Image 1 (cartoon, rainbow, N blue to C red):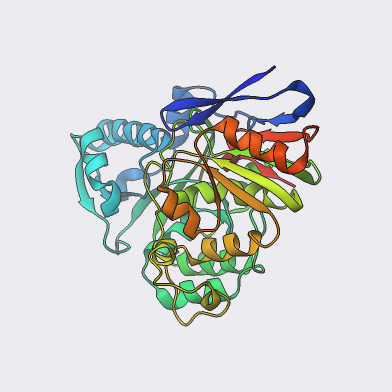
Image 2 (image 1 turned 135 degrees about the horizontal axis):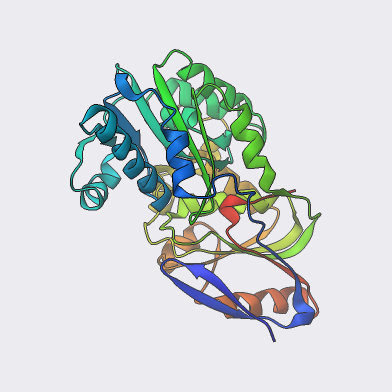
Length: 358
């Protein structure tokens, strides 16, 4: 009986699955173009940093921190000073603890002067791709533009990997900004590619991300693991489901495995849990609320498939979202076999935030 160890926050959980029930394991590594630290440093060194004094980051992943340290080395050698780092409130203290020597300020609005944005690029259900452009639009507080992007979504189901109208709107929004984006493509442990460009240009980025796309056909049962060494919110975890959603057959079962140690991460989802939000308003809202696209996608997928979750979120939260809750991986496996039969074949996807299935 194979033992499958799946990442779960800083630990792992095990699923004991019979060989006859395991259809396939999917863990496609991205092609590596950044082989070592020196190669990454040389690529970053191509940036003309003399006119930049600010760096903006919206996440504190290990790979983003690695890039910050290397940029600091470049600033030290060329300018004998360190740039200011602008970060959102939710990671302010974390960044201060991890980079104590840096001057760190809270990101309140997009800087007027030149700046560098470091972004962990991946797939996105609304925009198709999560890029520096989409992250700047989300953080801009331009509610009219965000509402327009939401209304022009690619249907009511997630569209990861597609060139969407919302993505076009995001690129138009950043077109006149004086910014250089460093788009990192990573599996959370290794940097596979770095694309240095203006945020309005995404052709190289989308091509590199799509190299992780796998055609697998329709699946009746799938266990989906978010990824390794990351601390996701529930909203982040849903990105893994979106990346696999088009391959799950009607009436199929999808089990998400993610610790969700950083909570919900979405105002819209929290309002629903607190019964202050009605999903009926999601089709044509009058205002944009953070995360409402993910709530819409989840409610629509719930009509087509059964979705379960292995996490540390309170049972009450999970019930309010109409999901099935499981204490561990083996209990979710038992649920699949009891509903689909003891001979059901199951596909297990590792690091699903970084893989797109079609």
